[in-house]
Each structure stands twice: as C-alpha cells, then as structure tokens.
Image 1: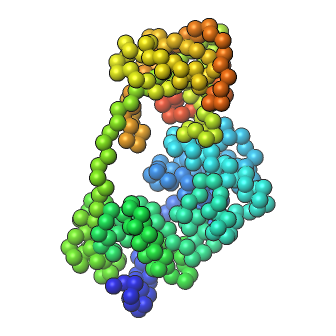
Image 2: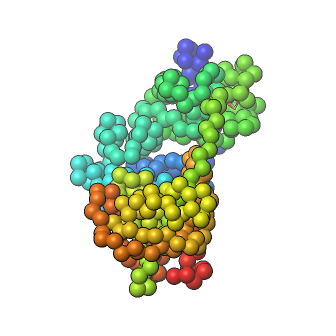
Image 3: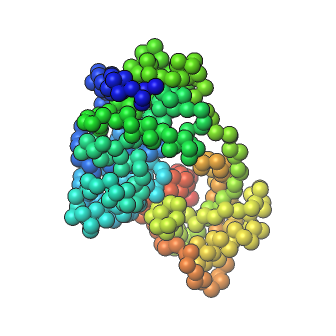
Length: 368
Ligand code: SF4
C-alpha cells in the first residue's frame, strides 16, 4: 500500500510533480501567489466551472484588486460583479470576510489556518487551498477531482460523501503531502483528477499514478466512486409579482441570513397552486408575500412562466400582475427592504438569476 511504504510515497510525489511540470493547466489565478486573488478564484470555482469563472475572475479583480478595496465596496456593487455566477451567498460572505480581514488583520490575509477557518464562508478546502498555494503551507485539499482520484487510489468501498469516507479521504490527502511544493502538489492532483482520472473514462494507461492505484489493481476503477442513492425531485410552485405604481415597480432585497442574501427580486413566495387558476385563491401565498413586503397584494393575470431547478427542487415560477388591496401596512421581522424602482434602476440592481430573466422579459415585451 502507498501509505505504508515511504520510498513508494517519495516516488509517487515525484511522479505527480513531474506530470504537472509537463501538463499544468494555465489559468489567470495560477499566475499569482497573492492569497486574496487565490481566495477569490477558489470561492468562484465552488460549484462553477473553470471556463465560466475565467471572465468573471478577471473583471472582478480588475474592479476589486485588493482585499481592502473589496471590503470598502458596497455589497450591491460586489453582487453586480458576481451576477450570473449563482450561489450568491458565497459573494456576500466573501465581502463580509474581507471586512473582517481589514478589521482584525489590518488588511493582510491571515497565515494561520485556524484564523482563516474562522472567516465567513471559508471551509477546510478553501483554507487549505489558499494557504498551500499562496504560502506553501503543508495543508491538504479535497474537492470533486481529488475526491474521485483518492477514492480510486485507495479503492474506497463506500460513497465518498459519507462522514467516515470523508475522514478517510482527508487523512489520505494529508499523509501524501510532500514537505515543500505543497501548493503545486495539490494543484497537480486536482489536474490529474480533472484530466486523467475523469468521471466516466479514467485514462489509466496514461495515468502518472497508475502503479499506486488500488482500484486498477482490482479492476474496479469504473465502479468507484460508489454513488449515493438517488434523491427524488420535489416539484414546487412559486409566484413572483409585478406590482406597479407611477411608472415604477416594487422590488425587495433579501436579508443577509437568507439564501439570496443582498440580492434584489420581485416579491416572490412559494404557492400551493398546481395550476395558474388556483393562484388567486391561495391565502397562504398572500400571507407569505405580505410578510416579505409588509403590504397585502392580490395576484392577477400570469404574464410569464419559468421552469428551473435548484438542487432537488423542480420549480415552476409564475410571474403575475399584482395589485395592492389597500390593507394597512404590516410590521414584522421577516419583512425585506423594499424599493420602488424605474426601468433604468432595475437594469442596475444586482438581481437573483430568475429575476434577471423576468426583468429582460419586461424589457423585451415592453410591459414596463
Ligand atoms: S489509474 Fe486510472 S483509476 Fe487509478 S488514479 Fe489513474 S486514472 Fe484514476
């Protein structure tokens, strides 16, 4: 076994680094050792492909070239530069973490692993990636590519997401690290996972670590990683309202603790309606919308229907006209910030992705 033999482990590390010297992928965030820029790229790359991140990263670091610039910016503007990348909570947490770095570490990205882990939105992977890539700290990483690669190297008999498997994989990732060139070694393993030990067709004949791979020795590389049982889709209906007054429309902004923290949206809530005709009679929907906006609205005609998926939810979103029923405003803690905006202001607000589609629809259909 690889871990039981130090000579084998030394050869393994050398072969990984030699392979990387000849095959490394070029990316803008790999040309720097600035922990801030590496951090930005790592946060963007969570749940998003390298190809998509490319142009976002360049635009973002051009506008926010240093951590103190990001910390000083308004969240609305930061969100605007993030719009389209999805998972907006990443963005608001990064903004908050930048402010903490300015307040607590004088604007210098901390070097201690424990300090980095305490920053909002930073987990074990991101802390290990930033510190190993920027400062060559001896810290392991585990993300989708290395998770698959390590699972095959040790012929992991369980799904890699179980807590026992995660412990085993992190321990493996830690023990294979060299004493120096840790950042390059971590990158090399991610690239081997991405380019060679691929999901469907691992290229074992050209794999630099084939001689250490227990899955290949057992002929089970196509069976690993073991899948999790499939989750069932859940159908869900949501209603968003177009509420107009004096050439303006009402928009709400989500609270920092909510899923789309800091982003703007049309007043939107879940509905029990299965068909559009049932929306107007959905009293729970009306209460939810009232809780969000502090006003009571009645949904009217459906203007547009969007279907999309978020994790295991298959969402049908009905975009309806809404009218104020004239009831007195409500006071409650869930109420979001709201604003009446013009068409020009709507174009500038950082919007939730489906809200952006609805805004484009309004513009194209000349409804607003
Ligand atoms: S030998 Fe094949 S299965 Fe094993 S690590 Fe390399 S590509 Fe993956």
